[in-house]
Length: 384
Image (cartoon, rainbow, N blue to C red; front, side, top):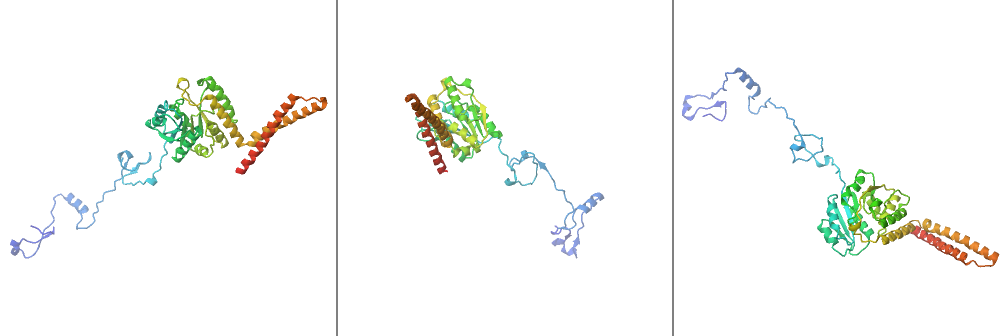
C-alpha cells in the first residue's frame, strides 16, 4: 500500500483523484515519553547516519586446554582470544630424556640376544646389534626382537663392532651410546644407572663397576692384572667392563681415534679418555656368571690378548719412553757386567762363563731395544 519510502507515500491508483498532492505519513507516536527520549538518543534519524551506540570490545583470556587445536604454548603463558601464534616465536623445550642408543656387538650369541634386546628396548630409543660374522641365528633372533642389525659378513673383532656402533650413533645424532655384551651377563634394567650421570652432565664416560664377589676366582686375578696395566695412574677400578655409556663428546673423540679391533678396545677407550681429559665415572652394576655365562672368549686368551695389545699401544704412543729408555737401562747393566767379566779375566786369567752369559743377556736385548725405540720414534715423528 505504501511506496518504498517509509515516510512519504502516494495514494493508490483507484484513489488518485481524491488527493491533489502527496501526503506525509507521520512516525508512530509512543505514549511512553521515556522510551521516546531513549530512541531519540540512540536511533539514527536518517539512513546511513552512524549510530552513537557502541559496545565495548570484549577481552577474554583462556587456557590452552580450551583450544587444543591451536598451536601449543609453554606453560605459564596465557593467550588472548584472537592472538595468533607462530612457530618461530614459541620457545622449544628440550626433552628431559636424552636420545639413547644401546649397541651390542655379537658373535654367536643366539641363546641370550633375544631377551637382552627385548629388555633393553624399554630403556633406550633404539637397540643396535652388530653381527660380527655370526654363524648361528643371532642376527635373525635380534631382528625378531626388534633390534636394528648391522652385519660385518666376517669376524672382524669386538673393536670393529664398537667402531660401527660409534659411527652409527654419531651419524644419527644420538646423545648417548650404551655399550653392552649380548651374552646375558649385563642386566639391561641397569641402563638408566649408566645414563643418569650422562644426562646430569657430570660424566663423559661411565663404566659399570663389578665387585669381586660377583666374579669367579680366575676372573678376579685376570681383572686385577688388566686393571693395573690399563689404569695408567687413574682411579678406575674396573677397566675391562664392557657395560658403559658415552656422551656425544666422547663418541666423537673415540670415533677417529680407536685403532685396536680386538678385546683391548675397552682399555684403549680408557686411555684415550684420560689423554683427552674426559670426565670418567663408575656405577655399580650386577654381572651374571656361572651357568648363564655364554661368553665365547676364553679368559686366559682374552687376558693375554689384552696385555699384548696394551703393550703395543704403549710402544706406538711413546716408543722412546716405553722401549728406548728401558733398553738403555738394560744395556748399561749389560755393559757393567761385561766390564766386571773383563776385569776378572785380566786378574785371574780365568773365563767366568756364567758372568759372561749374564752380561750378554742384558747387553744384547738392551741394545736392540734402544735402537728399536729410536727407529720407532723417528717413524712416528715422520708421520706427524
